[in-house]
Amino acid sequence: MTTWTTQLTALENRAAEHERLSSDLIKNVASPLKALGAQYEEIRKQHAEYAVKLEKEKDVSLAELKKVKSSYDSVCQEVEVRRKKVDSATDYGKQKAQNAYHQQLSDMRNAKVTLDICRFKYKLG
Image 1 (spheres, rainbow, N blue to C red):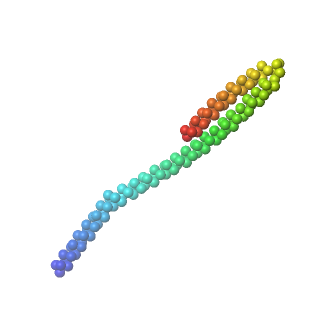
Image 2: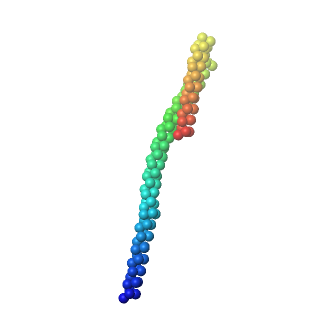
Image 3: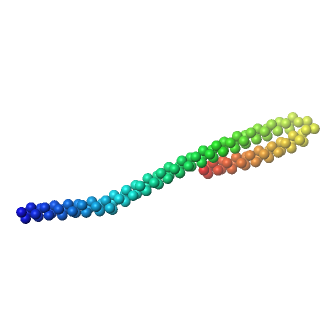
């Protein structure tokens, strides 16, 4: 009977040691890993939301860039029209046509600056 008691006590001690080791493993490894996993998932969600936000901002900037580019193109076409009018104007209307041409050139330069700023903002975004 003492052999059986000795064996049973050794087995119970071994089981208690296994229980303690498993508790320590859960407390020191599994729980921190679970917390890190939850933290990682939260960060991943934030990054995904931020990526969507950046994509929307990029689309808005691109739409604005296209709008400014088309405006610039129309101003450039108007400059060409004014230049042709200066070339074909008679002496009587030549000065008026030149003034309109120079004003249109100024408008074109302003549109170009606006376009360059818009391109710069698009590249930054």
